[in-house]
Length: 126
Figure (cartoon, rainbow, N blue to C red):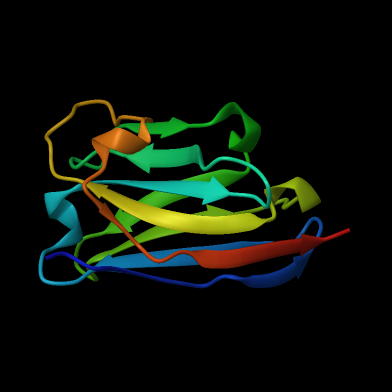
């Protein structure tokens, strides 16, 4: 069973930055398409950003385009979410997810992802 271990959440002021990390145990990060989803209080979990297994293609939610960047370092077996220009509405629990399927373009649907992390809290104060 693959476990995804997330880290890097915390409290930040609006306009600040955070970087989240996700490392799958047992297999290399390069084996999976990877994504980040988030769930704000009282809302459904939503797609944020994803990167293909090849590392070539990325898909972003409109709400984070130009501010959030996903990247992968296969040598460190880690996927990162760099979040800049954070807004209070970015406050949520952020989840890392892994997709075993080979897709040229990452999927944005939660059901496409086979493994999930426990989540890490990101709080942006105004």
